[in-house]
Length: 78
Image (cartoon, helix red, strand yellow):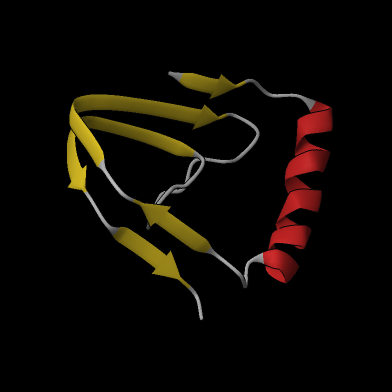
């Protein structure tokens, strides 16, 4: 479980980070040789971000029973 509580400073950081991400989000690369997750629960809440009523809410995740098996996974934006 990971929770970010509300704070004024965090609101500024989220706002400034969003500006930076728009500029820097061009060069993603991910590589995985082996990964095996079985029955994982992931709870993430960033209370500095509003809850989204539609679409995917990146600030509030509640994933249960996650199974993932990967070996040679590569992701690139090029």
